[in-house]
Image (cartoon, rainbow, N blue to C red; front, side, top):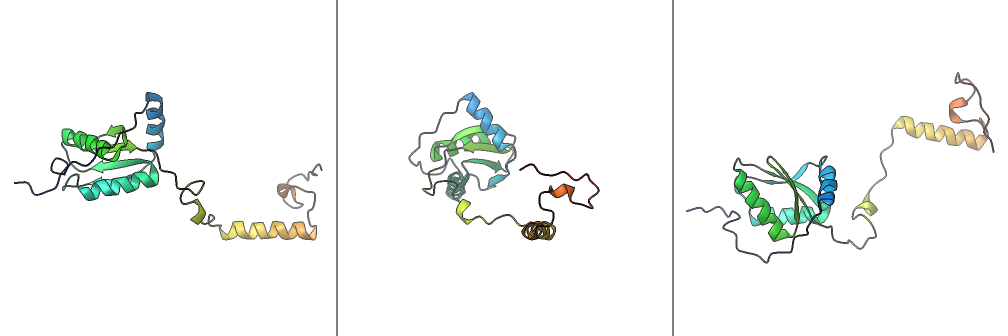
Amino acid sequence: MDTNPTAENLPAATPVAAPVLSPARRKVLRAEAHHLDPVVMIGDAGLTEAVLAETDRALKAHGLIKIRVHGDDREQRLSMLTTICARLGCAPVQTIGKLLVVWREKPETGTGGDAGTARRRPPRQTKKAATATKTVSAKKATGAGAGLTRSARPGSGTRVRRRVP
């Protein structure tokens, strides 16, 4: 008797209507998924409730995800894909070997944009870029090099050009 809770052994949950993708939309999603890494892995235990819950969380966060299935049985991978799409209400985009690509519309977060944009820090700045910014702003404040483009400062080896006001 098989004690592993696979997709066939899971209790039937209420299926959610999966969105239907047009060929043009599917092509755009395949192009977007090209650079993605798999965020969900299905191991030897198969498609469990925990895997479905993690897939649901990933779809809520990203919308378009890749799922890696560790196993050599192609029919089993395709049955997992249909089970995931039926249970979570997502649309299959593409299957490439052991990778499954699925998409579902991201829910509105109510923040007026991407869910994590308010918490994001500005990108890190190197020491060289930070000192260059300070030097340029200090020269502008003192009037040194006023009216000249930055690449045409005296002593830079380039011809001095004046800015047109």
